[in-house]
Image (cartoon, rainbow over the protein chains, first blue to last red):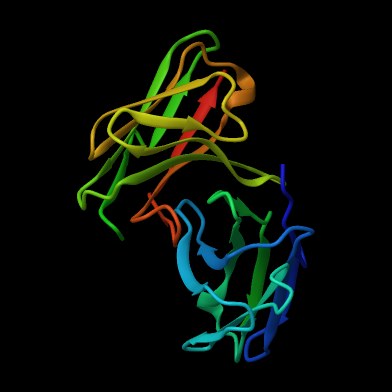
Length: 110
Length: 112
């Protein structure tokens, strides 16, 4: 099936630092989504992107839909301990099927 | 939280036994999905439904069946559970099938 390559797999950062993660694919997507998952919980939607080039913010989070429609990135500014969790990207293709990246595990040291 | 509940939240069963997981939503969304989540694989689609009695297969549908007799309920059945089906199962909904998905809290299944 289609693959979303998400990187990095894990990150260890200091509180207050900025974080950047991205997803790439060999296929085009029409929608890019970013989710956060806490242990024992379901993924929670953070940001949705619907147009190539779109840049959207949600508080300290900013995400962009790549111009080629094959990639997206998520930035977190001034990280805090509650940012800890696993972040997933997801893409919706031309056949209305969603595909998910394998996740970026974020650890924040106070 | 999009009004999605899953039951049970945890289950331990033995190989060869049938298992049914339930997803319930309160907002009459048309599209419902079942995913499994395993380390290193992210979320993989098992089956989805685009209306009452309308379902289709996802990328990992072997060994699973689904039913949707009411808008609010989407059932996932493992006809004869195997150890490879040990996983965390998530239900999701979307309004039109072309936009964002919202997830339930998950069911952790262990097949011994």
